[in-house]
Amino acid sequence: MSSNSDRYAFIGLGAMGLPMAINLQTSFSSNNLPSLIVYNRTFSKTQSVKEIGAIAATNLKQVIEYANIIFTSLANDDAVNQIYDQLLKELELVNDSNKRKRIFIETSTILPTTISALREKVEKANNMVLLHCPVWGPPKAAKSAQLSIITSGNKDAIDYILPVLVPVLGKQALPTGDDVAKAAKYKLMGNYFILGTVELLSEGITFAEKTGLEKEMVLEFISSVYSTNVYMHYGTKMIDESFDKDIGFTVTNALKDVGHIQKLAKDSGAHLPVADLLSKNLNYAKDNEPGAEDYCWSCAIGSLRVASGLPFMNKNAKKE
Image 1 (cartoon, rainbow, N blue to C red):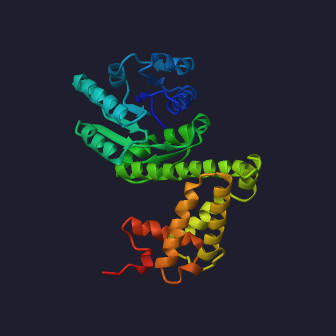
Image 2 (cartoon, one colour):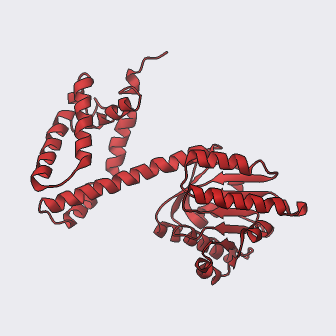
């Protein structure tokens, strides 16, 4: 884990940062390690973690002076840049004798360009390492240390702090290598799935209500039929491009069902953008890919691939 010569700090005690800081301080206390230093612009937010033994810094100068491993969990790209600009300014003022190696662990959801530029800026200074370790999971998962933590950056630094990441903060680490931009892209890709699920649930629950079904029936359907297995089944078919094998539901059948759904939605006054998009993508496949009307309906991804400048299927791409 860490040694008594290490001093950890945590900057940003929001919905995710606070439970993560509490878990760190709890672990440090139980292992007789130095108390966590915490900093938040709204000082009152430090109270709950102070009560279990953390030390609240009143400014970033104190963080830089005393801590050598520093977590940040901030609201947006601007906040990340502002905090790190201040940290680096304070670092310039630290006595040379105190300029030991420091590891910064940035956990926020930010743009790949932001974290790449920030790493370049931070690592210009001697003995400075910036890791990008964004997390997946709601605040509830942060409280119970059940986060999935993406890791990226210097491998030696990651290996050094890994026992603090898992199990103190999360249930698993998902390594992406040295490229911090790759971790940011991975995080945004995953969030897109979650956002899409929220949109689909929003439409589905509204659809149920507008058609006279009890909204609770949606949850009944999800728990009994629609599980993560659905994502794995169709996700695997999309990745393998096995649209013409083990076909359980064809494009023709899907268009029929989507048409029925659209009609019912129209008749009941429901707005279902996802159904309209799926209909568009399925029709593109049927009209432009020979034989696609008898493919698995997961080949709808081909329309999105073409719109994104890719071939309908990789197996159709001309090899150089």
